[in-house]
Length: 341
Image (cartoon, rainbow, N blue to C red; front, side, top):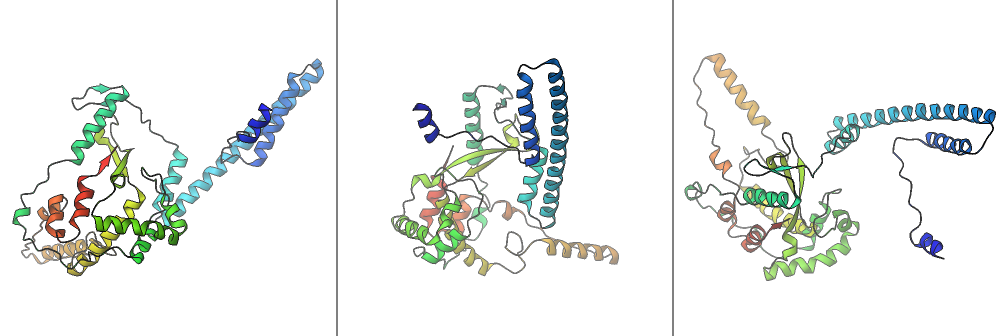
């Protein structure tokens, strides 16, 4: 009864099969296993010698077949990587490269403290990561230039409640194959039935917009460490990626689109950096041609490049300068109340 109940409730554990082993090789492995079982039984010397020869032959065929399968599988993965590189599909390219190299990084390796001492216990490492990201996320902003910038607010941004069409666009633009946040809801789940999703989240987001209170859970994130080059005992050689709640991304997309549409109207056509459908390649090429022609004509050239404003554009003060008339409660709450772990 116990065996039957366990069989019905739990079933049998599926045998893990490697991707590159074909059915032919698995059949040979099964035949070799059966031959090994016959060999273990009591047999005469003549029969045993015969079984040993057959087993050795099967073992040789299994090895040759497995070697052929793995070579063929590696070639197919390499071809897939080449095709991905040709169409600029970086995700598939990195995935195929990682599959071929099979390189992994242990996350439980020793960590260096701020003073260079090795930390081996889990508790000490957690404290070190907390200290590192606290300093990284709460660095002092250079606000000297803020007072020098004329406060030309960007006015006219729509501050009404998010519409159904805006949320629909936000849901459809969510990326697939992304790790979920603390809510454990992937974007594919929201996109499975967009209309049902809108029926669920539209009243909730409207209530958040009107009440000016953002649920605390929406701002909680989980930091995932990704190794970079260099000594992995140093926290600086790890890239932290924060996994946020997917519904938070929907609201953020609506806010971003409203700001983007208004900012796009006021930007000059010469502004190419950080704009969709444009790049700085044309500006760089133009500057290079001017320099080359100046050298050929042996004439003087005066160029002015301003980077101070660009370096100070990120920061809370900068947001307050440009977007103070646009739902400041949401931006300020998201900025101040964000929590990561």
